[in-house]
Amino acid sequence: MLLSIHHITEYQFDQPVRYALQRLKLRPKDGAGQNVLDWQLVIDGGRIEAEHDDPHNNHVTLISIEEGRTSIKISCSGQVQTADNHGILGRHRSHVPLWAYCRSTRLTGAARGVQKLLVGIDRAAPDKIGMLHELSAHILSTVEYRTGATGVETNAEQAIIVGAGVCQDHAHIFIAACRSIGIPARYVSGYLMMDGHVEQTASHAWAEAHLDGLGWVGFDISNGISPDGRYVRVATGFDYRDAAPISGMSFGARDKSMVVSLRVEQ
Image (cartoon, rainbow, N blue to C red; front, side, top):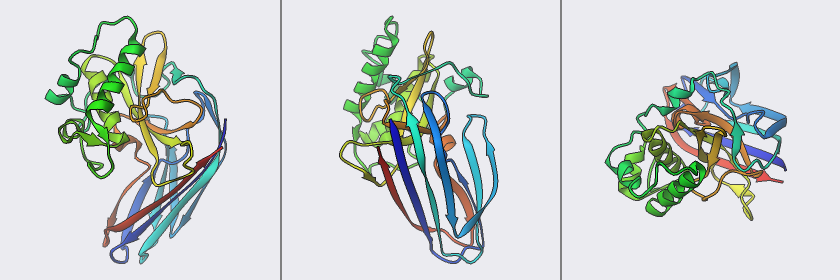
């Protein structure tokens, strides 16, 4: 499937910026069922300072914001050719060792809530993919999809207590559960072409688990499926913080508002 992506993020600051840096992880990955045909990044109000690939094979662009600016506009667009591999990505290729994806983080710690979710899940089932789809469905039935119920700092246990969250929370809970039973798991941020919805207000997130004999397999907990040709992988990591599309710091100003405009279409 050939997908066209147009992604714009505009920040308004409460006062003129004195100094600010932002880290962008917006360029889709090449390989594992997708091929980036072209990609452009345009910064209005800043400039690119450096680019590199991090240990998770994410492409990172470091930008600075022009002194005195009260806003910045980050625009990226391009075309990506995807294939439907039923969520299977294959062997581990990251510089991060596989065992590291079994360690919990502040956002993916497994305590009482996660352990309760695992009750009734047959961890010894020979069909691991079936077991993980069952876990995914159980998470969605327990923690309903609802915007505004959580924030970017909400961890897996907190989302379970609230009983609601978004794709980021579903991914964190799934990852926490997998790691607690010895299955390596990682967070994925990216794009999804939604049926009947070209215009979107946010990118998407899901999880991947590593299974013997298959390698990495994707699970979109919020939609109850494994990623297909409508999905574009952008960044991966231990949790949201490693794969956040935009993060950074500023002096002399704080974010007043952020507006995201996103189009993903065939």
